Length: 578
Image 1 (cartoon, helix red, strand yellow):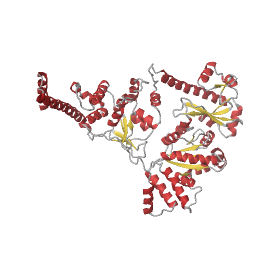
Image 2 (image 1 turned 90 degrees about the vertical axis):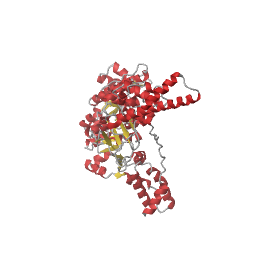
Image 3 (image 1 turned 135 degrees about the vertical axis):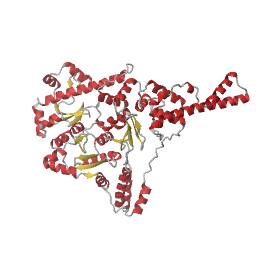
Image 4 (image 1 turned 45 degrees about the vertical axis):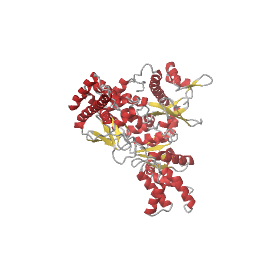
């Protein structure tokens, strides 16, 4: 354990969490016997190999071997760290984390986050109230074509040019002002005057998936530079991991068929107003791998829409390269490149929603966009250019996890460079095949002790079958200390499942051994598990007796035995005859 959060709390949190429900809200599970299955979300899985056990509160993929409990799933699927995953589960169950008294910094960070959520929500509501009191801000939004329902739906606000005027107009107390300053939501200038970094700007609150306000985007209504700014990063706000508008999309479409990614806040709002209500933005920043992972967690098809200028086209190509490793047989991307000097806001006003939807329908597939861009400047009548094309294209194609998509793109590439028949193509694939490093997996030799520990880890209630451990205290069998340690923990926590047991040992020296053993398939029917476990115990005990017997017999031949040792060998012989 990390020592930052009490063990009892984590155990209680896991006991309250149903891992099947937790995972099923993110990826659809299907009942298969007593377990649940689906295609693995962590690798390009063509057949369902991802299994979730309600009984063990544990997940495991037979394809890529990823496994763990509810906390591990959040860490791997949501890209959270350990503390963040505990916070997520705590929020889900409406619990506050009782940090241990000796870990002040983690406790402070946690409560600072809670305070930030509270303060960003308060200031957001003040901005929203203020926009209705500010004619210039309302006129700007009307001019941009944004109606009142969108102002409310996206919680749009306005920050005045003068903080003191803003405070006075909205009756902001000195206590709240001090808190906003202490948490760096407002600042102080060289003249010792407090000011809002968003002063004079339309405010676009940014929400997390729970609807909490975590930061803001601001757009000037005058000729201030820069035109757009975002909140500085805090404990709750990271630009590279946030998607603007996703919370609003999910309110309308819990499982959207598409997500249309645009560049600006107003683009999102205007398109949503025109009934294209699956639009999001990456806060005006370049797409990151974290953005891509979030997008694909929420939909199977992402459509990127970029402005038609050079910067927009370059951004689209960068986005493709970042997204390629996350494309699979089920996850795909498309592209819309708008006419030059147009953005989604301007083009929909010119063409109307119906024509914009046609652009979405006719969006370029990933393969068409890929070859359209990679062929730029290539002279296909030149052998050198064909070679250059292969050198440029193949590393990008090889980034894709799906073998099917790789082969399809390589077929297109082969035709472009003049490889037409199947034999030549097979030869081309052979010579150009990307050499993937084989992941060496630790393969356990199924020794009786490993099987014994594995059965206990997978079925902690087996500990109730062990009535005495005295017979194993002097055992020299390899692995016995680990077995006795796990047995003690299971006996002291009779209601533990596999997920809770592994969590108990998360940061211990033996956690990797236990994780490996937790996934072993012994091919034992459930009704026979108890008998096998008891037989293994007896066999290990018998093996210990035989080793001791051999030692005593050997000693008797050389030095003779003491009276005590003679009684001991007589007792061993008697036990072995049973």
